Length: 225
Image 1: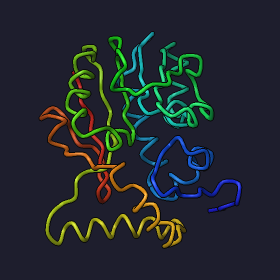
Image 2: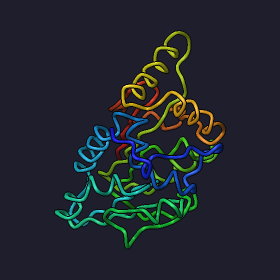
Image 3: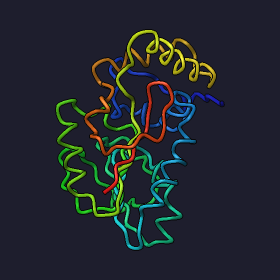
Image 4: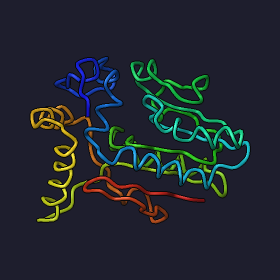
């Protein structure tokens, strides 16, 4: 992968998406750190397409630079569906490049009042929300989900226990190394995330969350109504 000076992230001591370097290099960085990122993006779009009706309502929660929106664009246009991207970071919003740009909301999703919707996507979002706010946030989404709709989640999970935890952690590391990330960058990123990123306890999603993806400590779920 081409790591040009213009695109390489200078990892801050304390990770934040309000950092201009993080926002500018996000598209390259996330694909280095998560080698499965594009594959899972495509899977999210595939699942979402099954639940987006004609004139449907779709939320992209934690929209970053528009990755999910771009992956959904064909279905949104064909079905004349409305996409509302929600992103709290001003730096990321400034670089948003996807459908629904006129509807882009710069706000913490925990404070947003959701309209009834057909699909909501949380792609690597919950792990950056306050732990105490997550259950209420998921309950709020479920309460606004229309019949026949879906909430699609991809996130980092709390570590397994015992030797399995070691194996899965090494799997994640091996993926980053295979993508060409330097060891110093891997360590700097992990230390930067301390206290900022806290993995998800999947139990809080409820018994109606069906797992559809897993790679090491990362997993995906779909909740339907």
